[in-house]
Image 1 (cartoon, rainbow, N blue to C red):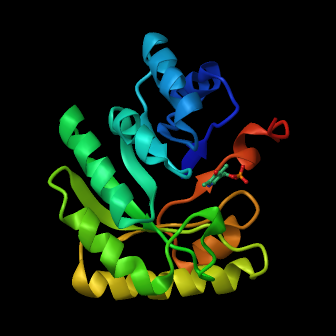
Image 2 (image 1 turned 90 degrees about the vertical axis):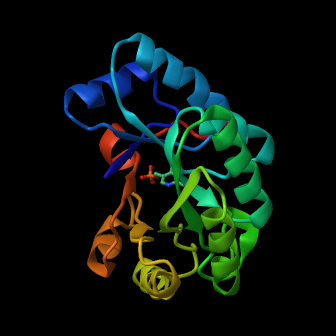
Image 3 (image 1 turned 30 degrees about the vertical axis):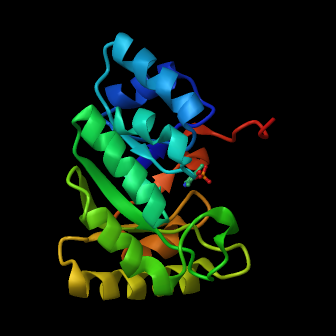
Length: 199
Ligand SMILES: *Cc1c(COP(=O)(O)O)cnc(C)c1O
């Protein structure tokens, strides 16, 4: 379980760490980068996951703190993140974000392009291809979406057996994700409370 702490302060990350919840997710570098610094200053050690849409001009910053990046959805982004990781001398675990319905607006690559992006990740010296991630489309049942994601994950493992991570499931659909075999859940509101609407 990854606790997604976006909109919540560094102090809440420290509280989670005191409860041994040390896998922490953020979705925007602008918010995450200062929070990472603040959490370290407060003396807590956690592992950061970057779960949001990633812009290429933020890859160097994210490579400086993330252990795992869940949201690589293009060959160009894989290249930029690979360069960032090399520049920071940090080895990153990387998931290919999949759009299970093929609609790219929420991020993610269509099923037919997963392998191409995965090969680009695998070709970067400081990136390790760890698996796939998806957000369930609003128009699909979570069960159908995550079953489809599991199929895509299985297809990828045929070529990349070490890519065993399936990051699926948020507060509203974590039961379906667990039932389908997700290995990683990204939970925000159900742990931390409702977020204020984004301004
Ligand atoms: C915010 C966020 C989550 C957590 O969502 P909740 O509904 O609060 O559990 C999971 N994944 C991503 C990509 C997010 O941006």
